[in-house]
Image (cartoon, rainbow, N blue to C red; front, side, top):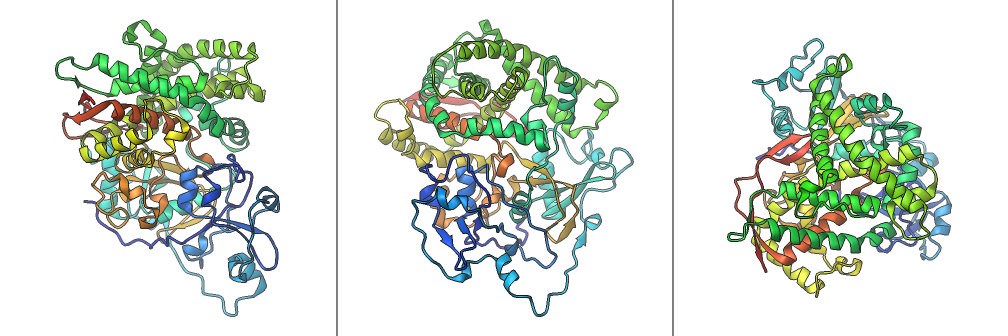
Length: 601
């Protein structure tokens, strides 16, 4: 049981102020968003309008384009006063002209406005914070290798299970931990959701994270293939340029609605494949992971290129492109894990891990590029005006062919590995909780008189979505998110200088009883009553937060919604494998086979 450290209470009523527009979904026209905005409020002096929204609503709705303007961390600020606070520009008023704007008390004026009206009579003395050098953490840090020696074979930690190492650090040192993977370059591990919130709220215009230097090096040295390192591995103005082109396409509701019928057919084909490969007598499938890879690849390929690859055909051996893509993604994430956490010896010579990366990238490029070029050529010569992702990207006319190819490759490779492993964890939870499974089946049966999944029917399945959310909490595939601070910050009482890399570790708070009652239990109902939730929403961010959130979020969610719905609609699922284990392969993956019995309903 993870110990319960006393953390700063998070006030559920804290409100954040969205400080720039436009939102990619559009406040005015998005049906999910308008009912959740309490009201637009005017201050008495008409200085501007405030759009007030809880942090939980921001995260659930995936509001990615707005930017909370950074304010300076003051040594006298309380944690609550560091909540985002800015006045929206006047354009919002016109965008929300159909909303009735009541007058409210001057008490709603932001703290910044109040400070401008009245000078404090006796300013509080500056509070002194602890220095990062005094922060607890693994020691000693040795020349060159820092504290990474603790991950060597036979030492304290194991790179094959990063989660256990983070859990041990939390037990030993508390909610904030210093570590030096490289000598003299400290990183900070955070385990307090209040600290997570501060990190994500004050990211600045260009949020910075540690990019995969090895992948950037690889791609920049092959200009004949790549004119860009890809959206995930760029920073600053180049990152912003790419994101402004790609994100609106992937986040547009019409794109998702357009793809849903095709995803429903992918789900039907997956059910047919499972019926074909299960043992005809016992209905056992020994391991769902490889089948989940095929499902994830077929889904993300169809969503990206608006065409089917054939991964769910019974004989995959004849489909060399699909087999190569799956193999390349496995190799890619293995090499990422080794290169990200290992010593940067690849800068001196081509290590075995770097060669593995080379093989994976080459395999993926060869498997994808030809088919992407064919799809691009076909779409450019077509008069069809449908809303597919690739077609929309082509219409923007803002990406050259090399940028288009690398963008689609990254979307496919990232989608396969994360969705496949997340879906396996999800199946495990559904199979080991029969009462949840039956409640989900009842919801599906009521919403779906036939197996077709439509947008309207999906809107009537809150329990389905709660099941997926609860799986994210219990078994997060992405165990942590890193950021490099763009300004000084105070986290858990320590002054952290700008330029420091921090890791927000989500599994620890997700398993704390003061945040999630009965945390070991798979209990989707906890997500259905928002008023009963007492945790800081930043305790669980499976797709990140803000403008650097995963832009494939909507695709991943739709894949899991449709696949789980089809599975439970058609089968009773029973888990017969060993107790679930975990291992690290850049993300968290099952450490043992997911063996199930699939009995027709």
